[in-house]
Each structure stands twice: as C-alpha cells, then as structure tokens.
Length: 223
Ligand code: SAH
Ligand code: DHB
Ligand code: MG
Image (cartoon, rainbow, N blue to C red):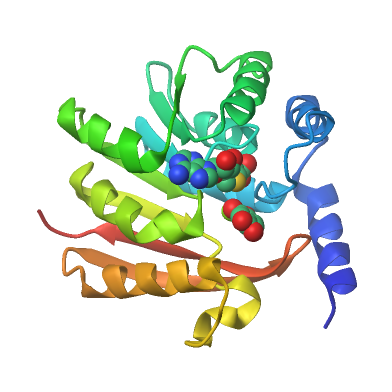
C-alpha cells in the first residue's frame, strides 16, 4: 500500500463526506502564502477532532500548537455559543496568520490565541487558576510533549479528553535508538502517559494524505 492509494481513499471519502469549505480552504491558502509549514492535520482528521469534541459536548477546549489555525477552526466549530477555545503558539508570525484565519471563520469571539512557549503559557494558565478544560489537543513541538502532558493533567477534570497528534512518526516510535529528537520526545511522552494512573489511553495508527502517523486519545479517569 502506498501514499498514492492512501491519498485516493482520502479523496474518495472527502468527496462523499466533506463538501467544499471556503473558510478552511482559505485558511490553508493563507498559511501557504505566508510560508508556514504544511503540517496541519488533514481535513478528515480535523473533522474527526470536531466530532470528538462534539461527542464530549466540550465547552472549553485547549489546543497546544496553533500554526495557521486550521485545526483550531475545526475544533472551535464544535463549541456551543458561549464556549471557549484557548490555543497556544510559540511563533508570533503563525499566531498572526491564525488570528486572521479565525476571524475570517467568524470564530474570533470564542478563540483566544496566547503567544509564547507552551512551557511558559501552560504554567501561566495553571497559576491563573483557569477552569479545567473539557478537551485538549496537543500538537506542538514533540520534545515538549512530556511536560505539556503533565501540565494538561493539571488543567483537566475527571472526564477530560486529551488527544495528541503525531505519536507514530512513520513507525519510528518503536526505535529506541532513533536520533530524531521528535521520536525521542514522543517516546518520553509515552512513558509519562503510561505511568499516569489517572489517565486511560489508547493510540491509533493512521494513514492518509499526510502519510503514516497516529493519534493518542484518552480520558482523565480520576482526580
Ligand atoms: N495544530 C495545527 C498544527 C500545529 S504545527 C494544525 O493542525 O493546524 C505545530 C505548531 O507548534 C507550530 O506552529 C509551531 O510554531 C508550534 N510550536 C513549536 N514549539 C512550540 C512551543 N514551545 N510552544 C507552543 N507552540 C510551539
Ligand atoms: C510535524 C509536526 C506536526 O504537528 C505534524 O502534524 C506533522 C509533522 C513535524 O514537526 O515534523
Ligand atoms: Mg501535528
């Protein structure tokens, strides 16, 4: 099986289930024009995140890693009116592109972008005593994942859903000798997740237009 076939299948289901969406297409185009890396989630993955947040009836969503706001828009669409999404981004330029895309999507009233390293903005959220989130999507720098997960646990309640992107990395995750800091970051993250007794998790490998990777998904099962 090849990337070409995975793309064909994504296209096939895309045509069936995902009507052309000018807002999301424009968000990708604006990100491209600003030369942001093309590493947002795929359309079918963004829609999966939206559906999961809807199932969770999430009113408060936290995202770590905004980029151009593509996954942010999908997630924010799951919110009821009065709901809120906080998204954390290190690069001012990415945040500026995302801000414009989120405004164009008509979601500026419910999305707050915080610029800075998540290793600073997550502790700041805890210090502020912010209310727990219902749904958290971790998708920033991979070496940061272990620490981000620990902060996310502090920003959670029993029942909070936490999802992490890119936990398979073309299968390299099984290589303990990998010299890729992203792979090593995910491996440390997996150790932290597996030793957290209050978290019940699984991982799903994915193939598609963005290649071979996977998601970790779990819920906080006790406080
Ligand atoms: N969630 C986005 C993709 C995020 S790409 C989507 O699917 O559309 C990862 C993002 O994390 C990049 O924009 C990168 O600048 C940001 N990032 C990298 N290091 C970070 C850090 N320490 N804190 C917060 N964001 C960071
Ligand atoms: C990378 C980061 C991502 O969030 C992603 O979805 C794909 C690739 C990366 O840093 O290589
Ligand atoms: Mg990702």
